[in-house]
Length: 197
Image (tube, rainbow, N blue to C red; front, side):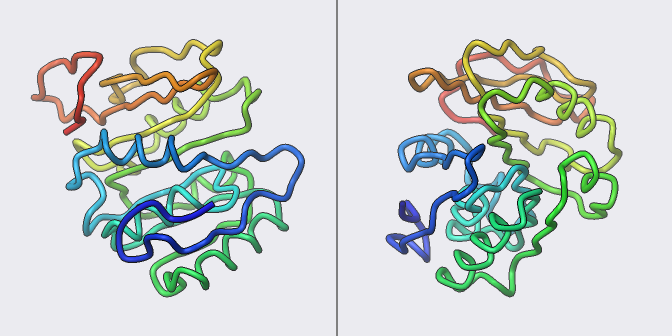
């Protein structure tokens, strides 16, 4: 597994080691960042939830994010994230929160332009996590994006508070949903956008 693009392109990453974790494939990572507009993450803060190996947040750092916070409950996986940050040279631009997501969210004081989520495949509470993100004031910047990977058999709502579904992509059995933080004056987003602004 390697970083797909940016300043750390080609750097090899350690994968997931816990039985319940699965890495985001290079193909899906590349697709996510091809769909996102660069101004969603360049020079902005990024949050990687259910971080696993940290590959999504590290991809954002490689492509120009100024900071990434990683949340991962498994202590062995947190060590993998640390090792991957050392390998890619991003230790000074990252924070690791070794905690369950629901416990970590209230303590995050930053606002993020991009939130990345690739939770365990069979996690049934993805919608509840999106509700918590939507309800936490200032967690997602106005116009910011929340990207969530999940089983295509799990149907998520089109709207969670100010988070509105802008696009969905299917990759085999996986779905990736792109939610935009509504600014209050923006028009309703349409599904199937080639690039999410």
